[in-house]
Amino acid sequence: MRDPDVVIPRLLSSRGFRLTRPRQAVLKVFAETEGPMSAAEIYSRIEGHRIDLVSVYRTIRLLQDIGVVRVAGSGPGFQRFELSEEFTGHHHHLICQVCGQIKELANCMLEGKALDLLKKRTLRSVGFMITDHDVQLFGRCANCYAA
Image 1 (cartoon, one colour):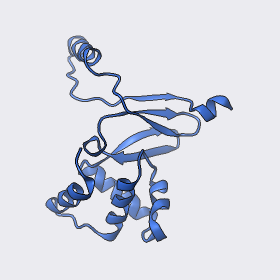
Image 2 (cartoon, rainbow, N blue to C red):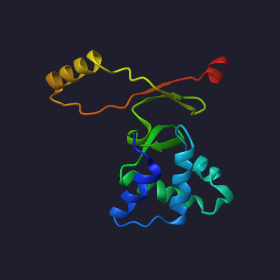
Image 3 (cartoon, helix red, strand yellow):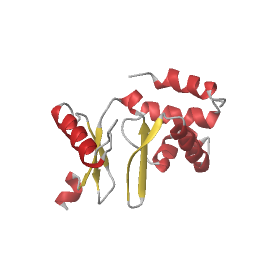
Image 4 (cartoon, rainbow, N blue to C red):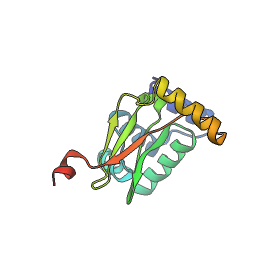
């Protein structure tokens, strides 16, 4: 995994973007926080709210466009973001359909034979070559299941 504090500023610069104070603030939150976050959660974690929520959304969009942030989960009324797997490692998500909580599932369920079989069947049946995957499992978290 690569260090986002080193890679992202270089990438921004190489693409002609400045590392502005709002971008630094959003990147700091991503680097210091594990797990997916909504734009509002990112905004709430910025010390002193030195930037506005619109700047948070713009920064997230830019970081998505250059491939360092991805949508980690979405559902009715929520969308969460995290650093790309280049920085976090490969993982999947468990998403609560009631409260929107997202938990990371560290081990890939589609490694080895299961993924190979899926790739072969998909290529054979519909002519689609799988090059990557992202699994999101939906259900209820422990708190919502108990309620």
